[in-house]
Length: 207
Length: 207
Length: 207
Image (cartoon, rainbow over all chains, first blue to last red; front, top):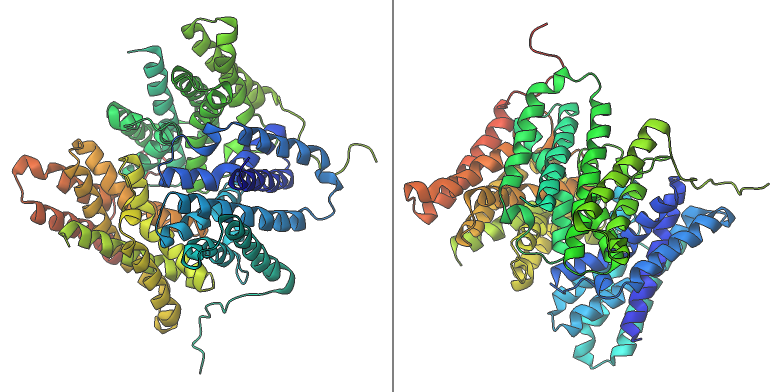
């Protein structure tokens, strides 16, 4: 299995865990868990593949992705009561999945010889859209747009590593790992230490 | 007209009726009715066709689908005040549309020689996504994820009939009718008699 | 640059301004502004291109679209505090973007020799879906479905100009300008003078 396939599977697995945890907060049944797990797990990558016109879509080419997401749903269904704070678990698992998905998505676009800006967009779409679908469907406040936290910023930064790597001749494996590491570090810093960019304020800076 | 085309038209018509009924609850004008009727009627099948890379999408290949959805919008616009409980009407029409759409969607994937898991996913996507789009756009609680009811489960069960039929050499017409019947029976049982799967509970089963 | 490309760029720019203004109401950071600006700016046209199977999608073929949306995000981030009523600004900019996008979207479908009904649908999708995505993601009441206002109606009317133009042998440039003008006039009349269609009322007209 290539590094990209590994990261892609890891992203689907961990995003699926977050989808199932959201399902547990909504007290759904096991099929509801599987539905949200699959939607969250493959949502971002599916949009990426439709936009890049990759046929078939990744989880249709390789059904283990669906099996991985259903497995995640089962695991959460029977173990979520052991978790002290499911919201904290969602936050951190989502951060890990984001970093895997951004690196894999950007690298896939890059291997298709897309321009740097499209590589950044595809990394961001792969990373951010599955979680966004999960939150919109489950009617939670989207993590992507939560005020005063870095989220899309982490994805853009991580994907930029892949977009800029050819300029400095970086090795593909190193590039992908650096991309995932930067994405995770920024997101973790934002969750744990409150790192953020200045947010827009309605009032002008000076009176 | 083949059985599949008939079921597909029936699914669009009946889903469109539910979209228009939701529009009547939101007190929209006739074009708003048509918009929600078309979105609900063709939403699930459109996503199915995009994922399966079927070109053109079914309602672009045959514009009668759009005409059917607009017709449903007109009918509801002028008759919805005669209905005692529009919510009950939405529930039962949605159940009928779900069963038509699941059978048609799964059968279409099956005739394209997709694997069993993809047949199940496509039946489920065709059946569940149009209603989900309707509910997300109209800001209603999605029927798909309503706690303590079978919904996605009915779709998965119905689509599985189509996925498994080749193993027992079932005739295509019988397969499709059995798929729709099973989907509807499960959904009807859930609405009328409270059939459900165990839902996730925050507390562990034993203290 | 052709008239269509000009209108398409204008639609992306002005829709992106509305996305960034919504981001300012949610007090996001600059990357959050860019995310909502891009989603709103290219959302409708992307769905149009996926449905029409145009490859690559317009903003992948020409990255200036993304640059235009990011530019709009920067402009709003640093100037939104100067605007007295951001809601009014969103309403009117959205009306302008709608009229550009409807005309461009319908014309693109028409040059692909699509039937009249598909031309109307593609104009409406291009015009209405970006704003709908913006409102669903930001959890605002969708402008598209706001009770007692013309919105989808304006798009359908404007796109119909393009669909019907071949019947009267109208020049392409005149057609596109007339389509945008009609869309804007109807929407402006609805915002400023309360023009509307009769809305559905729960009670029957006579007792």
